[in-house]
Every structure is written in C-alpha cells, then in structure tokens.
Length: 212
Image (cartoon, rainbow, N blue to C red; front, side, top):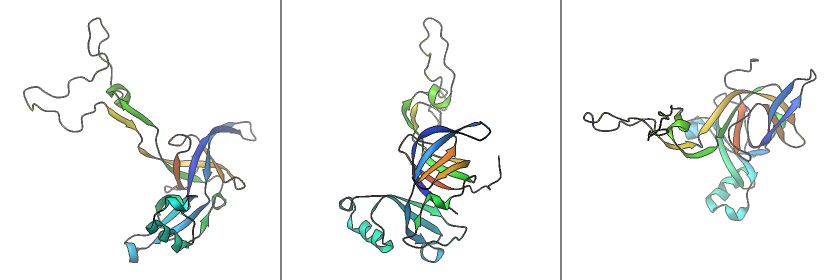
C-alpha cells in the first residue's frame, strides 16, 4: 500500500515519443508525515494516519498539539487515514514523498467534486423537459410526484431538485504518467475530481496494476 495526500494544480498535456498527446492532471503531492499508526490490538483495525501541509502552531489546540508531538511532526493542516490491511510497515514520523511512487503504475484517487449549488431535476437527474408549446407552464418543472387520492403523499427518494455536486468521488486505475521528485509533482492521465486546490487522497490501485 502506497498512499499520499496532494492538491490539484490543474491540467496540461504532454507528448509521448511517438507524438501521441496525453492529457494529464498535475498534482502537488506530499511530503507528508505519518502521525499515527492504528492496529487491531489497540483500535480494532489496521490503518495509517498521515498529515499534510504545515499549519501555524497558534491555529492548533492543545490536544492536537500533543497528538503531533507524539510523532515529532510539526502541526499539519490536513489529516487523513488510510486502511493498511496489507500489513505494510510504517513508523511514526516517517516522511512519505512522491519518490515512493513508480511511474506507469495505476492509482485510485479520491476527491470532492465541484459543487453546483441547487439545481433543477433536469440538470440534476437528466430528466426530460415538458412540452414547449404556447401556454405550457411546466417546461422545466418536475412532473407528477405522487398519486392524488392514494397514497396522498410523496414517497421518500423521489428524484427532485436539490443540491448538486460536492460529493466524495473515487476514480480507479488512473495511470501515473510522470513523477517530478524535485518539485513534488505527480502527473496522472486524465481528469480527477474537484477544482484547483482541492485535496486529493492518492494510493496504489486496489484492483490490480494490469494495463488498460
């Protein structure tokens, strides 16, 4: 299990030796510090907690200051936990960088998608619009939601207007095209969830490393 936190910088493109153009997302990843190790004996499951991006000490309360002091790490802005069911060995205070990742491998990347605010049923669920004839009052409104007499109520789970976006999304088997250890950058093929500056959780793919 290889894991790292990063931030989405943006998208660009690179060229293969054959001249093929590959769209890539640039991610500023690490360095991060192992701040806690959880085991089945102490916590009931195996996991690794990592901290990313330095935080001002005055912005951290006393309990969290003591938590970071156990690993000898400076206060961090972001904390994330990864399951470690493979049983890999980590140590408190261990620093993880992009150099621990190998080019050509497949990754699973988790982020928060862009928020769209409140949207109607057409944009949110892809429903069809109503008749566009003169006098129609339901061009983009939702249709019937329930029968009138029975059951005389709207059942839960109906696809209606509401908040869209800002969901936790994981994309699997994303190819790691290039690693820049000098600038702590990872270039992955295609798009990843979220906007610029969004936090990403990156780990080796759990469904194998076969080429696709």
